[in-house]
Amino acid sequence: MSYAPESIAYHQGEYKPLKECNVNIMTHALQYGTMVFGGLRGYYDAESDNVYLFRPEDHMRRLHRSAHIMQMVPPLSESKMVEVALEITRRNNYRCNVYYRPFIYKDALQLSPRLHDVSDDFAMYSLVLDDYLDTSRGMRTVVSSWRRIDENIIPTRAKVSGGYANSALAKSEAVQHGFDEAIFLDSRGFVSEGSAENIFMVRDGVLITPPVAASVLEGITRRSIIELARMEGMTVLERDIARTELYIADELFFCGTGAQVAWIEEVDRRIIANGQIGPLTRRLRDRFRQSVIGRDPETRNWVRPVFEARVNA
Ligand SMILES: Cc1ncc(COP(=O)(O)O)c(C=O)c1O
Image (cartoon, rainbow, N blue to C red; front, side, top):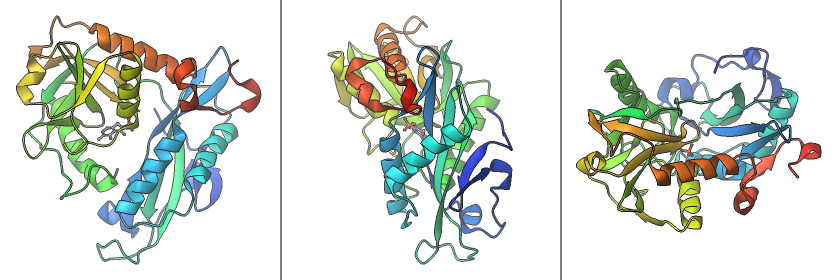
């Protein structure tokens, strides 16, 4: 993942090189974290030589909802924002895995930290991105000393940039102590999520994930995993998880656009089960990998091929 100055991005209503997409230092979003963002992937499938956007309509719907929570007026409709992602892929002529970062931000040069009467703009850039976490091995995790921000502090349901100071504190603490990722507890002390991923646990054959009221982002991968698990005939529960349940789980994994499905090997120096990827995690991960490139017949409508002429047969 690296900055590609010549890559074509979208800013202030135009497609232009990323190096020309700049803002004034007084910009409200820069001063107060008043930006809401999305993050979606395009998966390259060599066999069909096509790039598949994963659930782009769902990502743009969540972005619009985040904007609504933050009293923003999105300059583009959800479907226009999907069009921008498609057009960015075409203009950059991508033949690789891509990550798209669409966002709506308060662009006024305005001093007051408020939401109303401050103008908004939309922009999107993209990066070449393979794995965000190393999914070839298990994650070594630690419960963070930082609590997850909650609904009445900065809503985690809205992907607000300012709220990611919380994620950054937890991620750096974990990595600087030698772990791969942090697990947040919510303000009540129940398991919430990772710094940028939702979390799932398997106990006695049941797939369990914290409810959306446990200060989690309403993850699109989370929803996809729940749907795939039900298609696989698994029982899925959304319920509170206590910290020590993690230690005795049969299987644990993170999921998210960046992380995809990343199994967890260790929590707070306790090895989870036998320290290997569990069978349900493997099944879900394998099916998810088929889904994202449009090869899973039941979920083919989750992906949007970019290059119409080369649609997967
Ligand atoms: C805090 C947080 N939780 C969960 C997720 C996973 O959400 P999604 O699957 O929609 O990428 C993300 C990533 O966007 C995140 O930042």
